[in-house]
Length: 146
Image (cartoon, rainbow, N blue to C red; front, side):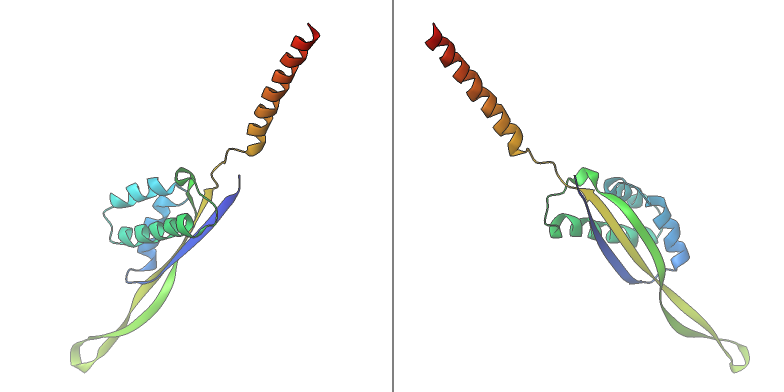
């Protein structure tokens, strides 16, 4: 069985990376189905963004891979949260001043891995047919000898 990988990259999420990374650590190295259930029951705002990224990577694996994948074997192999773009803003302060602050966004990278479905090999079927043919040939030979 071969392992197949796919990834998704969610950019510009308006949640700070530290808060998003807390949610991402809940589902790191888990099966995709388990991770989705965990994120649906997590009461943090970043949970929806992480769930969408995982579902996107899962769909990429199932739809874009050339081989058929067993959905039960899909795992999150890597999930990384990095800082995105920063928007500089200013808050008015007393005596005509302006205090600067930044709105930080997050980028989420999700990589999933799945196992290829096992196909029934033609060799096993041919081997059983060959055995059946050999046994029928032996029966015919036994009848001719009698």
